[in-house]
Structure formats: structure tokens, C-alpha cells
Image (cartoon, rainbow, N blue to C red; front, side):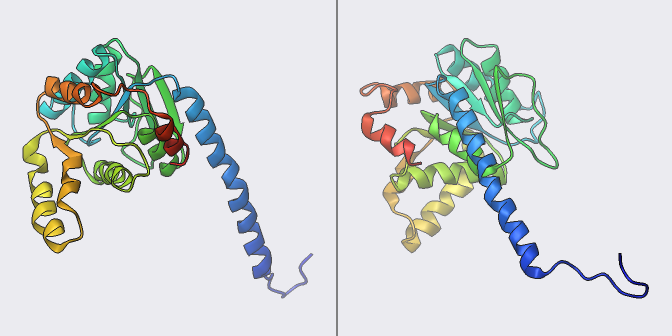
Length: 242
């Protein structure tokens, strides 16, 4: 009991730090569970294509329709389609795949705004941690397809390019859709990054720009025509250490 007139003192700083340290240590088990659960649920969906784009694109918008068409053609061609599971382009990708022949996969993230789970998912997996979710996008993808988007789309694009460039994941098609949207970024890559020597000109060969749904499907098939979709033993080892 606190004596009259005596002001309660806060916990000793060292006790507070111990408490935070303990919480941080225990949090690793939650992270591990996300990796284990997602890996077990997604390991049978190959070959798969990860599709990215803005959450703010409304149904009926030309880019929404384009994403839906691309996903439907990929699904009918035998590719599972992975999206972020939310609205906008993510919904369009899931919707196209959902009504196609192959599974529609949503990797959902808990966010304070913008993210709601769209209804077009055969496999729906939820994450609390962005980094665990990002690993799954790359780990199970045979290609990346990026439609117009904001910071999240750019984040995923740069992540994929960095991992391929540095040899931390296997090479795969990385396709940008709707050339007018990406033109300024690609011009900046060439005119600023390559010119400054911070990016090699050959690194731009990692990117393809394709605007037609069938062209996206053909580019992915052409890339794997001589080697097949299954990762080699060396690539499997690389993905284990992603």
C-alpha cells in the first residue's frame, strides 16, 4: 500500500528493459510459426506467378480489367496466381485466377487501413509481418508481374530485382505491365543510376515491359522452355537460404 502523500515510483528501468527483451525473444516464435504455416500451405502450388499492383484501383478501371485478364490467362495456362489478397489490382489478380483452372492465392497482411481480404481466394494466408509475407512471394514464384502501384508495389519490385541481382534467389522473369506508367522510372534507371555507375547497364536486362496479357504468358513460357519450371538442386538450396 502506498503511504499517504508518497508518489508511486515507476518500475526500475532495468526491469522494464528485461520485460521488453523477453517480449522480443518470444516474438520470434510467432515469426517462426508464420514461416512454417505458410510454407506448408503453399508448397504444392507451383508453378506460380506473383502479381502486384495498387490497392486503390477500382473494379472496372482499365488496369483492374487488365490484371484480371492476365491472371485468368495465367491460371488457364496452369499457373497458380499469388497476390497480396487485398483490394484493387490484388483483387483483380485473385478474381481472374479464381475463375480460371489453377488456384488463386492471397497472402494477406494486417494493416490499419486499405487492406481488406478480397473474396476470390482458393488459398488465403494471413501475416502479421511484412518480411515473412515478402519471402513467400519470392519463394514460390516462377515469375513476378507488376502492374501500376505505389510504395508497396515498388517495394516488392525492388526486392525481387535485388534478390535476383545479388544471386540470393534464382533468376526469373520480372515483368512490368503498362509501359506508360513505368517509362519515367526506367528512364531514371538508365539516365541516372547507370550514368552514375550505381547500376550496371546489364542489370536492366532483368526487367521486361509487356502490355498484352498473352504476351505475359508467352514470355514466362519462353523463359522456362529449355529448363522447366522446377528449381534445380542448387536453386532449391538457394531458396532454403532466402
